Amino acid sequence: MFTRFFPILTKLKALKNHGRLMWHAFRHADTPKWIKGIMLAVVVYLFSPIDLIPDFLVLLGITDDLVVVSGAMWFLGKVIPEKVKNSLPMTQPDNTGTTNNTTSKHPAVVRSSVLKPFGLLLLAMLLIAALGSHPWVQAQFSNIATFF
Picture 1 (tube, helix red, strand yellow):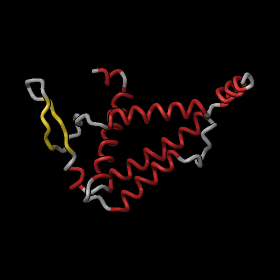
Picture 2 (tube, rainbow, N blue to C red; picture 1 turned 135 degrees about the vertical axis):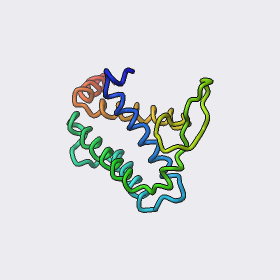
Picture 3 (cartoon, rainbow, N blue to C red; picture 1 turned 90 degrees about the horizontal axis):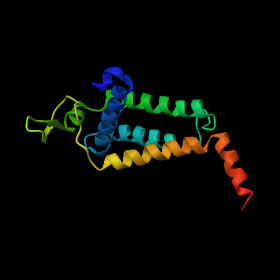
């Protein structure tokens, strides 16, 4: 219901489902090694201090990371074998209100797992890195450092 008024929520849910698909494909034995190599290269690029656009340019620096990650997720979504995509465990609520684990092609609701705290931690680290690279924040830290 809220996705009708806030279309960004639909995009965030799709990003969450794609992220879980990528994690599942990385752990799956039938995924080719070159696909896993591209996944690792994207993660290394995301955390690397060497970027196409430096991160101290706040909006542009983060934007190039988002473009690389979203482009890689689109490409990897196309080249991951169908066998791996179809083996992704899904949960679907039944009429009793409980959830049962089934395998389905429809990415409705993906089972919650250990990755949720990891994703929240990753999001918090990205936010702290983005704020820490801002020149105003660095100037404030340098002013505080003069007292010590």
